[in-house]
Length: 203
Image (cartoon, rainbow, N blue to C red):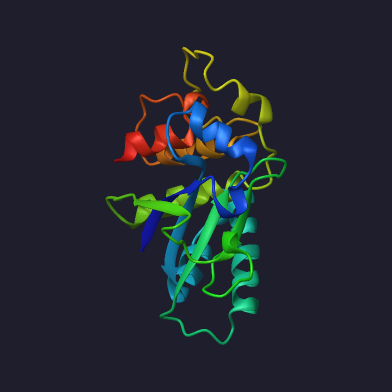
């Protein structure tokens, strides 16, 4: 099992004046951040079917996601590694996508070093993967926080209470909240984190 943070440069699908400006203002080459889980197909089945009724929305979304994976990849062997990415992107709600080797759109292909940098997150045990995934499932379909993205530089002095989440996200904020669910970088205020900050924190 692998958990990665994917950092996109202002190239390819992010090759716009705005994204280049964001990269420049925030002091690095990156303009978008997201999280990628890489499990074998059999592990996706086990993990997504492991949430009990007490998990409510997470259980429902996990079951729906497995139904989609199983239908789409029915002929794919159980030992095949399947990368799923959870992300928050400008103008859209939090979503999940499957990476493949041959999609026409580079955003949906396996990470390419020309466009991205990936940073593997070392977790202590399988329970941490399960917690991180549950968070991503729970926060699906929340809207993008354009105001938050524009005001990341405004000092924030308080953390949210554990177990409480924003009503909307920008990309790197979403990733940092996910990391904090598994006990990482708890001293960081996610609302102030840019993709380039994430790179600096994680490397």
